Image (cartoon, rainbow, N blue to C red; front, top):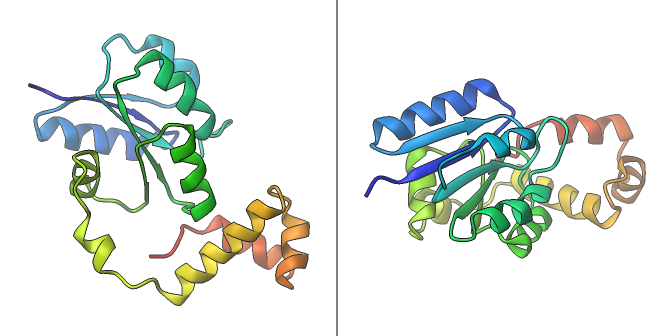
Length: 170
């Protein structure tokens, strides 16, 4: 049976490359850039790769409508801005798993198949990663308010903004 994937990501280049990689592995892949294009998807996907931060919306807000339309589909939230609170929120809303970029094609496939990703298990969390997780936790406690988070962390607001613009370290 050929698996059908739906990729929802506002990064055109990333989405197209991932789509081609999945097709080379024998899957059928559809790529869309925004929630507005969901209505154009005709085939029912079995596996959905959803970016957390879309251009004008949050991928978290799409999980429920996707689950209503395709209840049997598995959803992996993929993001460059990984944090424990958003991972928990994604799973609460119905996502099957959560991966941070950069994730390889094999990481994605293994995660959909319920297998552990050896690299992720073997890695010890770096100091940079622990700092990132802490910042995300405090940011979540302050409802996304950058100024309040910077005060709570005793950090300059611009420094915090620069840290938040970077991809999550591994």
